Amino acid sequence: MRIGIIGTENSHVDHIVDHLAAGPSRVVALSGGDTPRNRALQAKGSPGLSLVDRPEDLLGLVDAVVVADRHGDLHRAHTVPFLREGLPVFVDKPLACTVEDASAIIAKAQAGKAPLTSFSALRWLPAVDALAAAGPFRRVVASGPVDPASPYGGIFFYGIHPVDVALRLAPGHVSSCDVTRSADRIVVTAEVSTTEVEINLLLGDAPFTVSADSATQVLELDEHYFVPGLEAFLTMASTGTAPVSHDDLLRPIHLLAATAKAIA
Image (cartoon, rainbow, N blue to C red; front, side, top):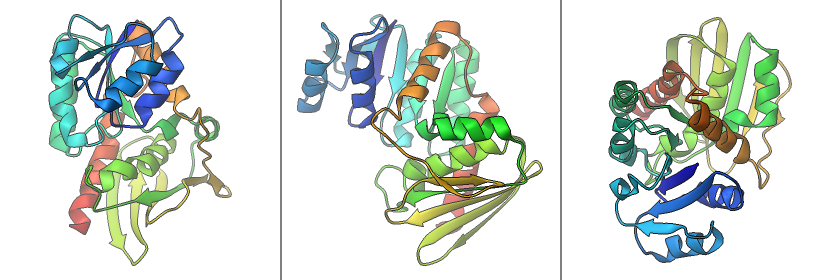
């Protein structure tokens, strides 16, 4: 499988290029032109990895696309040419920074019959997998750092991590959402089907943690933490079956949009 990447400033791109450098699925092209960053990725990537100027220049060169721009506001424009052609697309977190953009991306995927996925890599950590298999739960609490002033979409940039983890462990309809802000955190509480969800967006450095009717555990991120999510994308690209439903792509964006509005 030939994979192209858009938005190479993201450190996740290093994980992708490194993991696929010697595999049957490989990164064959990077968008963004002949920059020092892209040349460094090219040097450690698969032989023949090419650099193209514009995202749409990847058409005809690749079988699947990763959109990895740090700012979610770029994702809609960068996914559309590929979804229109029916190519599998993985949008690295978040899918978008507005419900309107997220809905438009999903609609384009449906129209083009294109496999589409997006998620926080924390969603696929072994600890989260084990918890998901043990549900349902009465109460889920997830925490992680966030910067409301981030130039990459404010709380969307890091907030997607605890939100996506919490909602994976609490499937179903979000019936209520309340947001409070204190000196050191933004607390989001929600009723999700029969589960009470609390998400602590911590203002400053902090570990990612989760609890589900049990003691809190720290989500450890080792050098390979991105690999399970990458493998989920590769499986989707080869089978056409998305690992996350369209409804579940939208739920975290709705929750983060409500939170952003409440703290504005």
